[in-house]
Image (cartoon, rainbow, N blue to C red; front, side, top):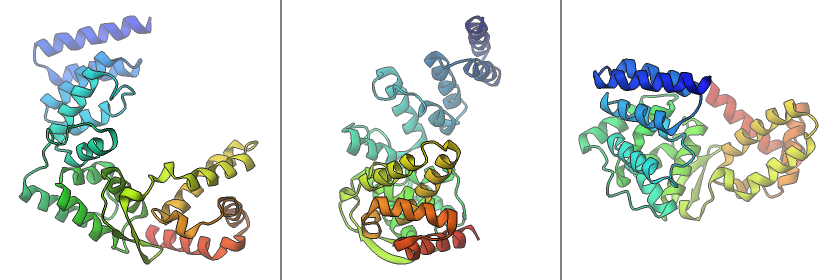
Length: 280
C-alpha cells in the first residue's frame, strides 16, 4: 500500500513538472521520500533544487546517498551539484582521498566573492553547517591562509577548529600549520595526521568507555559524547596530551561523575575550563 501511495506521488510530481510547477512537484516528492528511500525520487528532487537555483539543498540530499561513489549515475549528479555549489575544496579533498580527478571540473567562486565569504565568516560567532561550507567555495590558497588565521583565534569554537583541521588533513596539506590547543600554540602537519575519529588513540578511549558502560546504554551514550568533546578539544594533538588511553578513559569517567580526574585531573580541568569559556 505504501509503495502504491509513493508511486502515486511520483506520478503527481511528474505531472506537475510537465507544467513547470516546481514547488508543487517538490512537495509531492518530499512526501514520497518520507514514505521510503528511492533514488528516482532523490534524483528528481536534486534536479528541481538545481532548477530553482538551490544547489545547497541538492547537496545535502545527495550526500545521504550510500552509493555516492559506486553508482555512476549518482556520482555524476554529485559532481554536477559540487559544480553548481562551487565546492572546490571538497572536490580537492576527494581528489586527494579517493584519487577522483574532479577538482578541475569544480571551480571556486570569483576573488571578490571569496573575499566577501572570508569577511562574512569572521562576523559569525557560531557558524551553521551551511555557513561553514561556504568556505569550500574558496581556492586552495585562500582556504589554507584563512584556516591558519582561524586556528590561531582564541575565540574560535572548538567544533570549527576540529572541522578546519580535518579539512586540511583531507586535503593532504603537507606544510606545517599552527593551531591553538587549550590556549597553547602547537604545530602539526595535516598530511601526517589522522582524521579525528580514525585515530587509534580515539578508538582506544572509546572502546575502554564502551567496555565499562556496556550494561548501562544511557550512561554509555552520555560518556561517549563527553569523550568526543574532550578529545575534540585536544585534536589534532591527541598523542601529545594523552599517553595512556585506558587511564584517560578512566579519569574522564571519574572526573564527570566525581570531579576526580586522577592523573589527568589537571588536563581535564583545562579542557572543561576552555569549554565553559567557549559556551560563554
